[in-house]
Length: 497
Image (cartoon, rainbow, N blue to C red; front, top):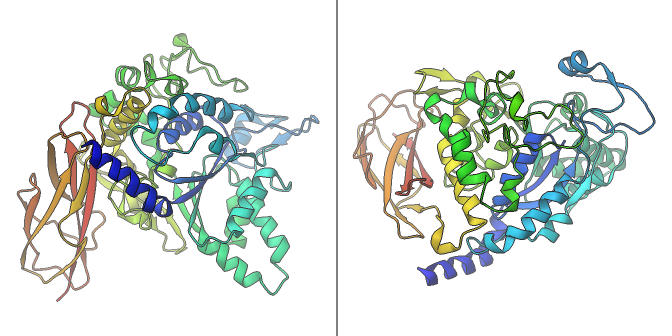
């Protein structure tokens, strides 16, 4: 097993890096951003972080230091705060503080997987963007120039722009590109290059710059927009997550498996009643044990999960076998987004992206994300273990493959067999479960799967399936640990008469 792992690391070094998606994170530094950031660092080997940029939002801005009062353009915060000189600003050092903790666990993380960037490499990516006010995009900043240069670099690989706060720093970067090239012969070429390269993954609209500038001047830019599904990982999780799965976000699980006794990085993770207080944010009272009952979001216990509302933006980038990266409508750890009928460059959640929730037996706008909560939390616990345990004493996910193509063309009424195989790096036994992701299918019916709990499954193609219609089958493989880890493969069956 040791030699197999060594070969896997070497193979990853040879071919893995070029296959990792490029990404830049922009963040306003809210406590849930900090928690999202901590988890993201544990997955920093799974994608190519190319920028970490401080930005502002409707909830957090620094002010200009001159006493200028600002009133939000967003209806909610306009009513809540009125005119302010600054708002709940957490500063521009919290990322660096987390890097100091990451540096201490980095040697241990590298025992478990290749590709983790060093703390110094990550420090070099930290830039300050447009932070003075919500939606401020007039200034050219270090962060906006950094994003601009990445969008204009020689690489043709897509770059995912994660928006954890407002889009204003990204908007400034795009505005700088427009100002430089708009009236030149190269403009159409530059415009196409940037639109082909940039993919914005936004969690809500937290300022007006996307609506007022980006959507108007960069109409061909791809946007993944999450306004519903993230709630199962945000402050209102108690309402969005089925009661039977609350334990995965409650204090016992979080404390024992992630926060405590797992090194200095996860110890900085904000949770209810943990005694921590973020500097600059007077509304961060969640760490006070006396104030966590009967809050606007519910009643909580010590070490309960608060929020990671921005994590779906990078969950989408983690390759767990669901083939969702270029196909957000397929559904994956980052949720399921459907192409807009009004704007073909925009994918969004909402009613059209609702999945059937077996716990409530209703269609649910959040369940495209909620369905992965157990797998996500168990995987988080395993990564927290990587911070302190050696390879032998930690858990690692199964490696799953299909024994045939992932895309199959079949005539109606034929019986077909599908099979997969899996190995576990730790030598654990694995279990298989096949299921139909019928909300993703273009075929409207359901199929009956035979031996769905084995590595080989059979099914009979429906007689009423039309030419070109698809059926998505997922094989889900888990190890047999108490906190099990899960990986997948997807088979897309297309009717071809």
